[in-house]
Image 1 (spheres, rainbow, N blue to C red):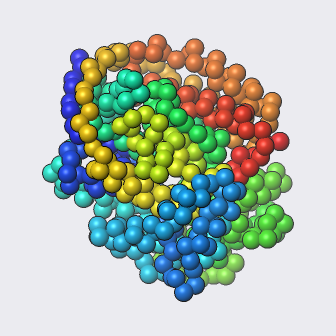
Image 2: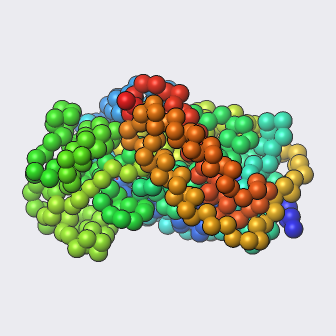
Image 3: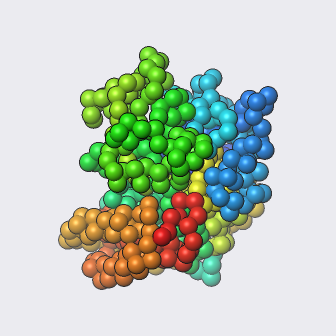
Length: 486
Ligand code: SIN
C-alpha cells in the first residue's frame, strides 16, 4: 500500500542540524520532521565536548579560531566558509540560550585549539541541546513529527527534489515537499569500532548519491583518539576536554609519548593524536590518566566518570583508563554551498551529512555542533527567502515491504570489518583495492533491490557508503589530515 502526504518543507533527521532548521523555518511554513528511530536517537545527544565559539575577546579572536580550524584541516578548508562560521559563533550561542539552553561559565580547551573556547554544559552538552530542541519542536504547531519512519529514497526528476519515499508499519509513504533538508547525520556504523549511535548508517548520503547528487571528501573519516577500550559498540567517548583539563596519554611503560609526535603534545589535533596512539598500540595498551588528582573531576565530567565506573570499575580522577581510536566523524559528505544548497534543486543538507568546506582534511574539535547550528541558520534563511511552491510528482511505488527476514547481521559485520581493516586509520594501496573488490561482490548477496525493511535499508546504505569511502580513499593518493596512506 502507498500513502501520500504533502508539506511545505521536509526535514529528514533529528539532531541539532535538523531540529534547529525545522524550528527556524516553522514560523512561516508547515514542516514535517521524519526520523527513523525516536527523535532523541542522534549523535548530537552523545556529543560531550561542546561548541567552539570565541567568547573571551581579550585573550582570543575570530582570526585565531579560523587559523586553528585551517591548521587542523591542513589548509584544504574553504576560507570564506571558515570565516563566516567562526564569526557566527557568538550568535549561535545566543540563539541556543534563547531556547533555554544554559551553558557553563567556564570554557573548555580541546586538541588543536590555541585558547579555551569550547562552550559546554559539563560533559553533556549535546544531550541538553537535544532535549531542549525536542521540547521546542514538539511545542510548534507548524511542525509535524514522524518517528520510526525510514527514509528509503529521494523523490526527484530533472534534478529537482520533490521530497522522499519512506517506510513505516509495512507501508510505503511518499512525502511531497517544496523543499527537502537532509540532516541524517554520520556514517560511523560503516566501521566495526565507532562512537556513533546505531542509527548512523549514512542514509542521507546513500540516498543523495543514488540520486546523482554531488558528494565530496568521503575519504576524510575522523577517528577519535580516545575512546574507551571495550568490547562493545558504540564505544564510550572520552572527551578531548579531559586532556584540556589535565589528563595525559601514556603508553604501557608509563611514558607520555605525544611530544615525540608533535610539539603540541597531548593537545595536538585529532588526526595526529590518533596516528600516534595507533603506533604506540603496536607495543602495548595505551592509557589516559590525570597527572594531578583533582576532586572536581567527577563534578566536571559526571557522564564520563559514571560510565567508566560502571563499565570498568575505574576512577576517572586517578586510574589509568585504557583507550583506543575509533571512527567518530565524517568530514566530507553531500556537497553544499554557503546556504546549505546541494547540487540538486530544492534539496539542502545540514550537519554531519553535509560537506560545507569548514573542516578540510580533519575537523577541529567541537567545530561540528557549531557548523550544524550555523548551517541550520543559513539554510533556514535561504529557504524562507527563496521558497517557491514546487509542483508535485507521482511517487513511484518501486518498493515492496519484505515479508521474510534476511539474516543480514553477519553481512553487515563483514562490511564493517573490511572497512575497519582496509579503509581504516591506515590505508594501503593493496588494502584499498581489495576492499573495493570485496565490497562490490557483497552487493550480489543483498536481497532484491525492490524489497524493503529496516535491516535491508541499513545494510544497503552501509554498503553504498562504504564503497564511496573506499573509492574516494583510493583516488586520493597522498596522505593528508585524517586520510593516512602508505
Ligand atoms: C570530544 O569531546 O572529544 C568530541 C567532541 C567533538 O567531536 O568535537
